[in-house]
Image (cartoon, rainbow, N blue to C red; front, side, top):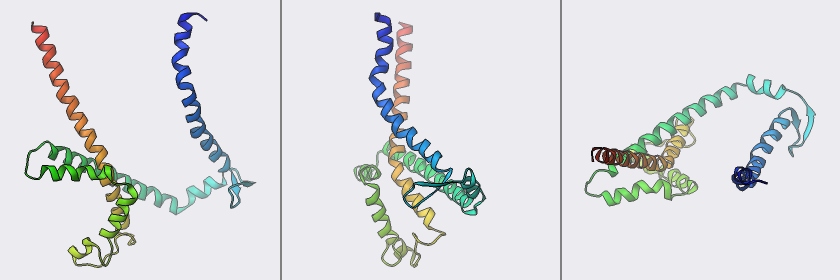
Length: 194
């Protein structure tokens, strides 16, 4: 094998094992799901009766399918916009100097430090109908997590808060890149003038 061919193949030989494993875990379940979707299955998930596209026609004619699309759209909208707003707000506040900045810097790190299950338990206590702080402040008895009017919004707000830490770092990194981009342009201008 000549030297140029070896160097063209060598990088791919390093990533090939991970690509094979990744493809195995990505494509096998995908095609298995497509295969099973054409069958009625038993309780163990084994195909019993070939029904073709009947499962798909049942799905698209079901009103609960369209309801789930609306719920998903509302959830994603609240989570994306909410987490971006919280992340941007914390990034802006971290660039200011004010009393209590150290306590605030600890608070903005909480979404990244707390596990999702722990955050869910904390929010469950905060939103509890009889002992929760939200109902005590509002002087009400709303069951936030089981009432259909409020449950989706409460879960979406919790998810937005958990994702806000990632967006915070995104805004900080963008700010750093802008800062260094200006420095590099100033350096280039200085070198060009010299």
